[in-house]
Length: 173
Image 1 (cartoon, rainbow, N blue to C red):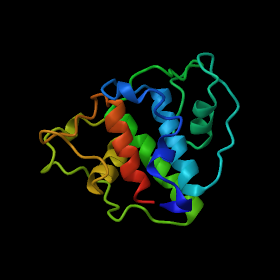
Image 2 (tube, one colour):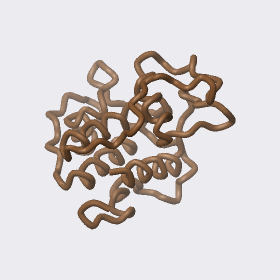
Image 3 (cartoon, helix red, strand yellow):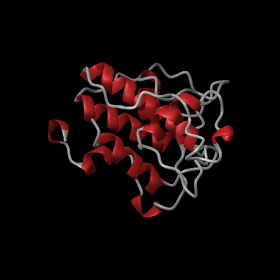
């Protein structure tokens, strides 16, 4: 682990209620996980963005926006409690990897193919055009796995699955 960081540190603040592991993770909580990943992997704190949202002033949301890993939903909304889909998570995690690689001068992903593996996954056509590159990078590098032969890009992710995903990423840095 970088900087002598343990797995629990990555989750600090990110999993406020670990007893709810089966619950779907909302955007704000996943943003916290992403910010914690970046700050632990780089050893540097992210300066929060200026708040342009009328539905949250959470510092983790503003740090996620500053790092380019999260964006508002338009009209001044961050939608902190909205459920996050697997393809949205792929986009956010690919941005985390870009940020950490840029900060650390590292190359996390060995397979740089941005083609979805339609032989491995039967539902690659369900992946939104804006998420295809990120989903391909994460699935091709086995950082996001499918289930029942599919990627299930529009499915929501539980808190527990999100934490496992975040730790898999952290262990690559």
